[in-house]
Image 1 (cartoon, rainbow, N blue to C red):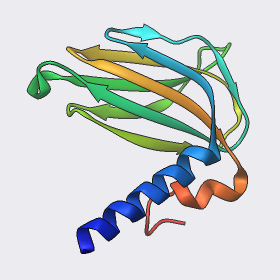
Image 2 (cartoon, helix red, strand yellow; image 1 turned 120 degrees about the horizontal axis):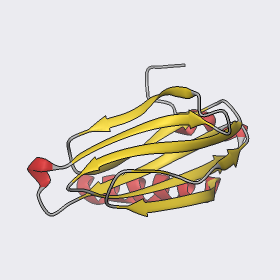
Image 3 (cartoon, rainbow, N blue to C red; image 1 turned 180 degrees about the vertical axis):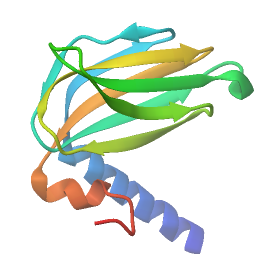
Image 4 (spheres, rainbow, N blue to C red; image 1 turned 90 degrees about the vertical axis):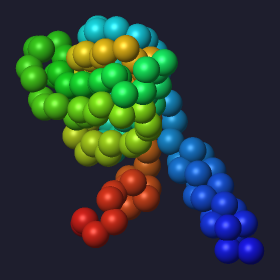
Length: 127
């Protein structure tokens, strides 16, 4: 019973989060690249997924670059594990992502969310 309740809650929260975000751009690949420029308002999300045929050997490193200046804003993700996640950003602008990957298939979605939804995406325990 508890497991069914947990699954139901997860599905409900997933559908709420999915409906609260509009995809601005989606990028897929297997190698190193710099994405096309995308424009976002505040707030926005990076929804990332990483997969590969050799789970113990995958790596993904993503840096945020300000466009068109090319200024390095910061590293937004570094992982050596298959998985997925969300990263919240509250600065609007025009950006690109610089991606370095090893033996990995990645999917990155840039999603625009409403300001009132920011709390849904903040890590628990942080304000």
